[in-house]
Length: 429
Image (cartoon, one colour):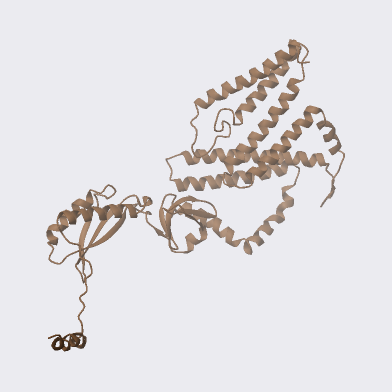
């Protein structure tokens, strides 16, 4: 069969369809700026791993199949290629949309594999000609459901078709929500927290609309689900009140902008930078890499220290002692000037030096300075300031006193230790 001239023409058309689709997607990809945070559903990471490549290849293959009767007797190659491309479109679409909509979910891979198995099995059954027979058999098995107006007896095929319709609608809704989220988060004219709450509201609204459309498509009457509102209200009043409180608190935090993404906060002795605000919890990342997941209700009801709410500038201090007798009037301006030269120390407001205490071993000086990047930590800049102070004191030959203690022996102990030496003196003579 493959030795026929039409077979070579069909193979050439298949290769041409794949090559042309690759060139089209590559040309489109050159004019699209990829997002580093989120993969493109249509283009993917590379040219051929998105949804657009198999879609264009499938459309070209369908068009080429129409031309085959004009070129001669068609061969069964397109009967194999078209189901394979269709399965690839379904797998790519589901995988890319789910990864874009729920990148942190652990069940995504399992769902992707399930969809892949179903799509490939369906294409194989279609190629060998078994799928129409299987669908016809499923159309003869009826299921019985009780309803207020009597019994509903859909077939297994009707249930499968309804499930596919619902899945398709929800995939489309998740795709729209991921596109809206990427567009909203990409903008710079509005604060990130406000964009985040807009993303959450948009996704919730799209999911609700999508669920209603999907239920109507399968023939379910939405008025029959009116009891669900009462059940949800009872559930929220008892077991789900904490979850509901966290969701409401999340929207309040984003709307009031009391906590914003990027703020340095301290919650329950855990200090770090807010990396993300979800609808149920907030992620705080410490400078050492640890992350804390804090329920949003806790951020509303407990005390939270925000180091950068109104002003990102933070005051940092360090303490040093100098010996009594040091000319502090001449030392203060030199300390201020040296600390000002440290890279992360702000010039306005500038550093300051105060005589904070008359300590037991020397004069205690407190050197304070301001930084504008607390998210980079305070330990590094404090170490640089301490090294600068130490170099200045060494250059000026100013001692940093250390604790010294004088031990006085009691008179009885001194006499007891001197007695044996005096009694041994005559015998030695």
